[in-house]
Image 1: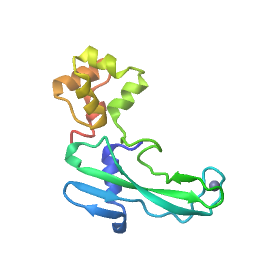
Image 2: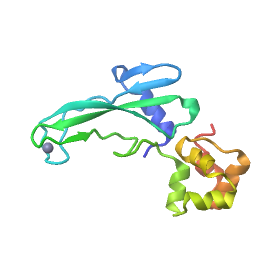
Image 3: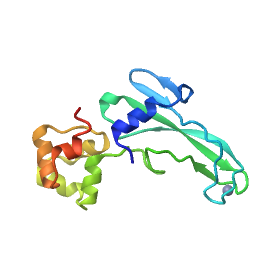
Length: 161
Ligand SMILES: [Zn+2]
């Protein structure tokens, strides 16, 4: 998974023809087409583009605007299966970009429920920290970092600058 900063840079470096819409609030993009693509099911390279699925990417701070990823789907002409193209920023069934808070919490095998209980944060609010990359107030951030036995910069360092 990529950090948010790296993702934003990655999209900004895509060739111009990959950017379908670009306004102050929204970017729609697709990835450059690959020379050869192999079917993950049967290994055939006899594949064609089937469709583009727009996915609104989650996990970005509101200040970054909305990013719609037009994910290409291929159809294998040998076995008939369809499959999504690989990309470097989200897993095949994900819509949420890398979130340090979620990663660190998961590594320590601590549930969201335990964090909100220990830190006195409502669950709906805590979920915004993981799903929408909202940054808590410093007091709350320190409580969470402390509970996860890490420090604020380790979790939010790349988003605070
Ligand atoms: Zn196939």
